[in-house]
Length: 166
Image (cartoon, helix red, strand yellow):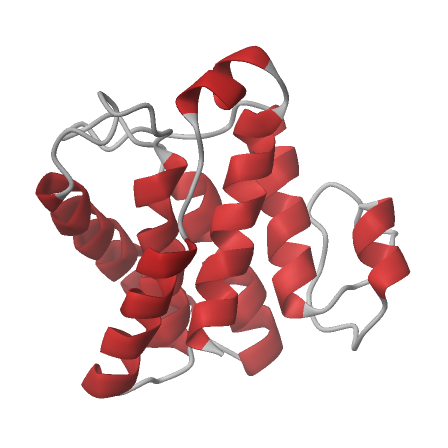
């Protein structure tokens, strides 16, 4: 959190675990929330591939909605479409784990699609955002299994998804 605060920017979204603290720019609030949520092990699994999409997905959807005035219905729709889109993309990414990549390489798409939905991108803009996300994704399983990289991956997936949409 301290690093994100030091970067400055327009205060737009809340930090979940520090309600008395400062608001941060959307991308940094979502990143901090995803890292802290993942560290608390409050994630889920897409049963198709056991990828934890919920952490970056929900962190992104709530930060974007807070800044852009999204309704509860819009947030729910963004979360549902984020799960569905990332699940389909994950299905197409056969063998990514066997090649040494962490699930964040696939979960990143949930954040992108949710942000695209909440920011009302059209189909062409969303396609470009997904392409930018694909070129931004990363995460090595070995690092996630031997360091705090797992939490870092959740934050980076969130940040890259939002940046691709913007």
